[in-house]
Image (cartoon, rainbow, N blue to C red; front, top):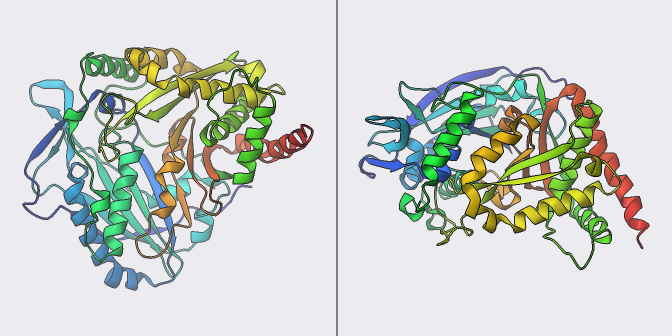
Length: 461
């Protein structure tokens, strides 16, 4: 169902710049690794954290905001690249680096929504992307440099507070950006003290490049950008406002059933990697393929292209707290006819599972990633953002767990988002963004498909 709630009226109360403590970080420049350059021209990642907050706006300003600011400053001391900018390397017009100088800062906007609607905006039903945009900060280009992080705190008087973040993907991946949010929230809960548990490791030398992947990826990304827009360090523009954002939850029981349905049709002599991620992504992929068949797009092959964490896949393995990008590309494809057939879930799960099993091998041919992505770009491959492993519902600033976490930036491309279920341990939340006329079809598939598969699964016993 589509929420017809109108665009909220947001009034800016304050804008400020938050820096790490003065003199705590020396001037630093970090070169982009080949993992960073993959995402240099990607759209920024946007997240919205919705928190119930039964207090007045003045209470937030007087009692909460000072701690938010001080804890942000302390956290930026450890995550200092986020306070810096992406800049061209002098004398090298097409190479960039992350730069930090004493006094660099993050823009923090404090705003108030004057007409309510918190519960609607924090819901799972389809909401217009245009209604969420006023809650998000932007990353304006500043000459030849681009900021890497912006934050907006929006209070709904006696209803809730929303923390919106916009992060330049050249700075870090989802693992690192959510590590930052956990660290900031922990510091805020403790009244401004940094937590040793969330200290990042910032060392680009941990990613060697003996095969010259940086140059290969940079050329590949430039070629891809030339097909869409002039090459730039500036992220791609925001998504069209006519898309809707909705969330569907697969419970732990749903996931158990999906696995059983797949296993019942699988040759036990040829097992494959079958995880929660695999069946979740397989189920939604089949839905998107059926949607496109409904739209009579006439494609014979369906494609997936999603990021995979390579921290423990490269040699030597990186520490889990490595800060930056360490996300490689995983490609999956299957016959459309088989995906929309009666065994579609099994076909999709097997294709995804085997691709994940081969990730370590695929890294040996990673120089082909840009070319392969370019070859399927016109096929509108489905992608994924987020992960249940990020534990976004544990980001607690001292007001309790978020009521909802959204990634509005998935609306820019055909990307779905994944997060752990807030209410059902072991369950998964799936976020997707579509025009209104497509939203109903996919929503019906997600709901009715589970009923059909449940009946099918009972027939196996």
